Length: 128
Length: 134
Image (cartoon, rainbow over all chains, first blue to last red; front, side, top):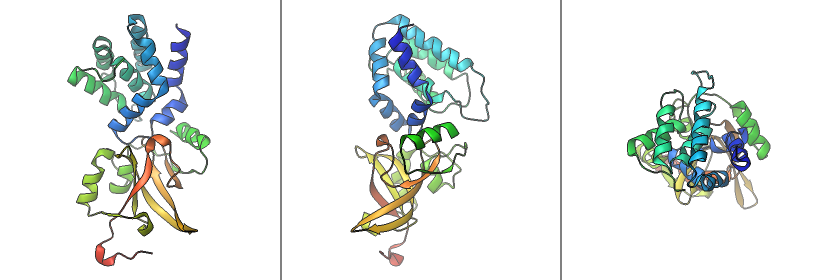
């Protein structure tokens, strides 16, 4: 795996990133924070025109979705998966694929909202 | 959630952890729905109007009033004022608020992450007739 992308993905899945991105009380504020986040910006730059890297992110989303969680509680990977959907959203093909998988799993909040937005609008949310 | 709360407390001092209840409510739900619901911050001005809140100056706030945080003029966060103290000519304001999906904290009004904006608007549900500035 590309070392830089690997490191950035580790950051996105860290408890520090989760805490930082969980403080928002509105979907628009959350999206704005993603858009302004330097880690997310770097991932988007690395993804540009690289189908293998897009695929790598989609596979990681699928891995995270497969993790066992307690449906009584919010999904522990909600922020990470929402962040991946956001970076994927510069590609309709990959974002729709991931969004459809996300909506098969319950107890998401931001990830669910983002997946619904991608599928409902069939539009690009973020620019590469 | 406990871990996230600890991370936030380690990142910045001056936070008192009140609760890490995993129930899905946010800062708006804490104040306007008795901690029962998640209400998007985008509806905050409609709530102020529906519940008869009035915009007041920082110098007029007392305990029980509400502070709204803006980022580029967009509402991002809201908190309940629980303590007002004069420090020189300035009002030091302490609030209780829930940070999105994270914990409920007691903190000074200015002590929030940068991306939650700044505490710039103040509101009260006190009626004009009973309005007593302290």
